Length: 189
Image 1 (cartoon, rainbow, N blue to C red):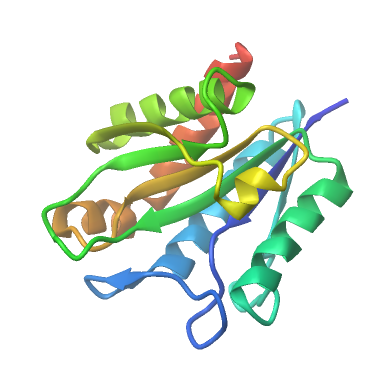
Image 2: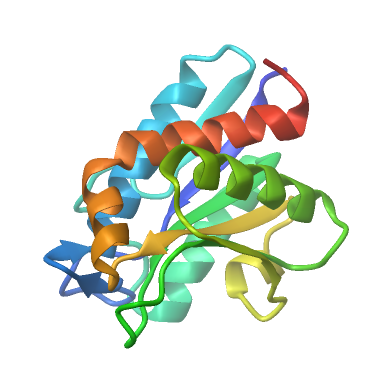
């Protein structure tokens, strides 16, 4: 049985509810869409996995509000019976000097926590982003309402110039780093 990975590409296209952050000429929902599609492709080429994305096309809109957009993503993963849920995001801050990668999980010392550590380490090693750690945030809807281990990945800061270059030019590398982190966590090569 392949391991089922649900990849949630955070946010909807601009002009819709739950659109993402923007900065340095980039849009979060475009980056998350592309990284998610690359990751889906990597996983589906590996017979040990079966992957599905929340947004199969770049114009896919989920829900009619922030809350219905989030519940559509969670309901899709739960009803598909995913083994793991990965929500891909990019961060933003009013201070353009803030940069780096962080992951959010529901609780410490959980499967999600250890998976997040491996994904974070892989991104930091491969893309040379700053390690901002694994953070506990049980209030995040997608972490609170999924039936499987779930990680929300903040790839880098769209509001930071050097991070934004990585987000623009390294989308495949981010996907590969997440894939490698997953393999490390599962202890498979």
